[in-house]
Structures are given as C-alpha cells and as structure tokens.
Image (cartoon, chains in turn blue, orange, brown):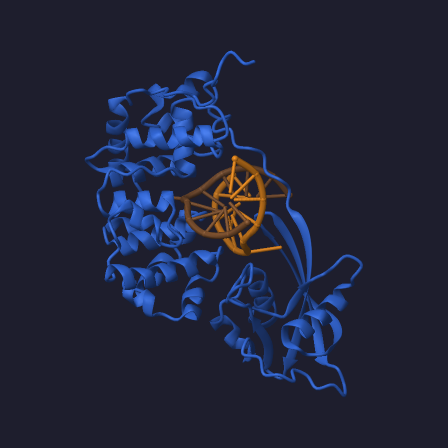
Length: 373
DNA sequence: AATCCGGGGGC
DNA sequence: GCCCCAGGATT
C-alpha cells in the first residue's frame, strides 16, 4: 500500500559534520564562566561517581549541601562498601530517591569484589554497576578517565535541541537516538570531560528552560531556535500530568519521652530501609482514624485506641500530593500490645529521631512535634 | 517503549 | 502551585 517504506521520522543529521567552532566556543566560555564546584577539583573516579549519582534528578544547589560531608564520611569506594546501610541512608536523608543511595552502596561493594576497589574504565563494565546508566557511564568515562564518551541529560537535551533546532519529544526514541548520536559526534578527543560538563553548565546557567540568557550564550550566532524564534518552544517536552491526591494516616505511640517508629522492609516498594511512624493509606470509605488504627496493627502488631489528631503535613512529590495526618494512639485496654518482638520496630527518644533516616513527610512530622522552635 | 520512582528548589 | 532537575530500573 504505502509507497514510502520508511518516512524519516527523526530530524536527520542537521549537522552531518558538526561545526568546528561549537567546541571551541563552548570550551572557551566554560573556561571563563564555569562555577567552582567541589567535585570539579578532582579526577578521583569515586568522587565523580558520587557527584553524578547525587546529581541525578537533583539540582546542583541541593547536592552542594551533601557532597562534601558524604566524601568526609565515606572517602573511598572501600569506605562506602564497608559502611552499614543505615549510615548510608542517613547520609542521604533529604536527597530523595533513596534507591540511588542503596544502588551506590551496592555498586561500591561490587567494585570491591569484582574490580579490586577501582572503578572500571570500560563503558560496559560501568554500565553493569547498579545505578549507572548511559548518562552516568558517559560522565564517569569522560570526566574521570578522559575517554571520548558522550552524555545526554536534561541540560544537553535543551542546548542541542535549541542550537540545532530539533523538533519532537526528546524522550521518545527518534529524537533520543539522534541526540545521543549528535552528542557523540560533538564530543572531542581532547577534553571530553570538560566539554560534557560545559554543555551541561551552559544548559544550567544560560540556556535555561525559561528566560534563557541568549545574549550571554557562546553559541548564539549559530543557534537555530534563536534564529527561528523557537527558543521558548524547544525542547518539545510533553505536558505533565497533575499530581494525584493521597491521604495517609499515621499513629503516634508515645511513651514518656519515647516514641515508636518502624523501619520499612528492604523489599518495600518505596522508602525501603527508612524509618517512619507506622502509617497506612486511607482507603476509600475509611476514616483516617480507622486507617491510623490499622497502621499500628499492621506495622507493629499493636492494638491501639486512636485519639486526637496532633499534626498534619502536606508533601508534594513528583506525581503525588501526600496528605499525612498523625494521630495520638494508645494501647487498647486489656489487650497486650506488640506481643511479638519485631526487629523493625524501635522505641526511641524523640531527640534520637534525628539520627534515623526518615523520608521527607515523616521527617516533617517529627520536626513539627519535637524540634524546639 | 512506557511506567515508575514517594525530593526539592526556583520562580 | 507549577515546572524542572547532571536518570535508572523495571515491566
């Protein structure tokens, strides 16, 4: 039926041969305007690895508060491999996406076991480590090992889509593939790590999502989006879905200065290994009070009588708006509470809550309740 | 190839 | 409140 066998969906090599001045201009700009970031002073592959994992889905300003203290606490792959998971999660507390920390930890142990404690240079070996995908492998290979490896992240997508006028959804295969290919053609043999960082730096500080500072851009003379007035339209990212509301109720079992918290199982779908107040999602046709009672029963095996609501926090995360309510709870009379010993239940002093890794909504509750103002 | 992941900052 | 952020793993 169709005459044309394959329409060229992807914007075919807009730059069959990348302009030579792209690299020159970009690196000259980077040498002059780059920010002085703590992980830029080193080529230590471990430090590069840590910074790249922290920077996944996380802005530089946030990572700045964690990177140096992490490196002091776990100065080497071996130090991290030796660490207990609880300490690793605690050091990560507040960075979010905690599976990144668990994978980094598992990766460090794998590097010790399989690679004698040294991060491997081979791209395929890097990709085999947990938590390292195409982006991070490219970052480590180019920055730490000086290999001519490309990388594509949100900043690179924006810079390239604008500079070369690339249409389409950059998360879908045709453009995605074109972006990786283009990045691979652009990255020079000479300073591949600096080039990649320069691309991201430009995206983070000049070629920003909104109100880009085109006047300050070293690539402005050749920028297709600027020429065509498409700067604000590119890249063509899909609209985001609205956050779904989730109601959650938690039980506060107080005991003098102590309070009960539970640690989520390693296989928990989220927040694995972190500590929370016993909580349960409020089901449809269920009251928050009933959910709080159920939470104490399911998480701790404690039959409780639920009292007044003592706190409420709202926490919006990527796709959910969590409304978390905390209810006072006391063991029901004539019923033994917590008959079984549960290793994942702890009775701690309120002040000690700060020493446990808690996810953001529960940490908010804890601080509301127990922190001096 | 689509979906999930349960933080947080900037504006 | 909305948008975006130095993504990776899972299905």
